[in-house]
Image (cartoon, rainbow, N blue to C red):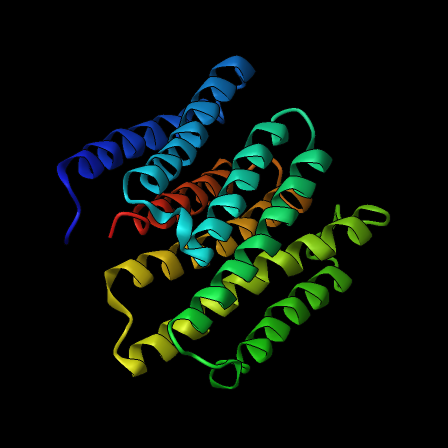
Length: 232
């Protein structure tokens, strides 16, 4: 793995804080939870920003677009502590921008849309499954008007997660995957998975600490992989 020592130190500290967050987010102490979460969110955002300057990535369009998407994820993380709606809007915008970044990356690497259009089928599978589960009452607390507001969000995160899943195979077949893109795509997929866990927690089982920790674990690990991909 071609990660410099500062990246390894960053990852170790970040993962240590994530383990701490597994307990602080379920402690009932809002201040402790907020501080822990804001530190982690600030860390992944500052790391990405540092690498943009350190490695001179501003001139690479897909990297610049991805940095903007990560910035909205950071804003969403902070806002979510006080407002589910404002945090969700920021995350939704960030997700759409991440989709644009990944599509731009594929074009930059010479991959035509015709090579990965079938990600739409995977996207439709996940969104349809979510809709079916909602209709059958699995998400028992997801009612209108929250459903109308939440569905576009789940579509946005599913879009970049399924797009990344498809591109893992396409890039692999083309022999251009490598650790950099593997980290980016895997991080995006974990990001998507995390939001299915938060849907389960918020709209079905609010008391489950295990599901809440699965949400945090997949989300913050996903963001860690995405920002480390800047370095690789």
